[in-house]
Length: 231
Image (cartoon, rainbow, N blue to C red):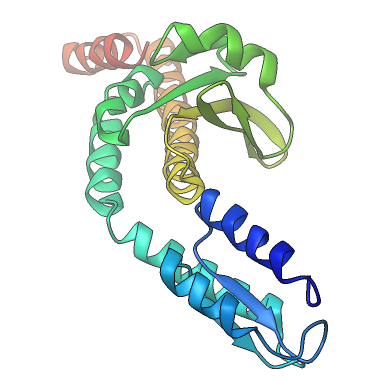
């Protein structure tokens, strides 16, 4: 390219056609300087050209740019209110179906959840059920399926598999998908622990009931209420 101006111009056109944000060029390595014709062409096409020294760390530059983009992107996501509302609701009703009720807050995202301990599947959209079963993986994975961007992962606690989750989004925004997914995964652990807590409370009550010849009506009513709420 450095000695072939027409090819260089063709490269610029290809970059513009693919909506490249900018062109970074390391000088003194493969090219001494950018030809004036190329500079004028990039200015006309609106493609920023950034030149850096030969010994500059391109990886560090890329990392800083990505971090800045991610930070700016997350500023537009109301994660705090979503998280707080979800915690409050799940504390009152720790069920998988409760999480489904927050689908409208996830900005055009659908999700599929399989509970290993309950042998139960819930999902926000029937169309994703069959797809999710086929793509569940043991490691966090991003992939594109047709017009959907898909993220799948597992939720474990002390190396015990609790849930498998798959998230679907039509928006190519990995940071948003990932952060929402992390919140949902955290809440799934919360549901599991909450259900364990309720189970222990119910077991304790049954022990007291069996060992007591005269259980109070209030305790029995409490047991019934918890059984109806948590199943």
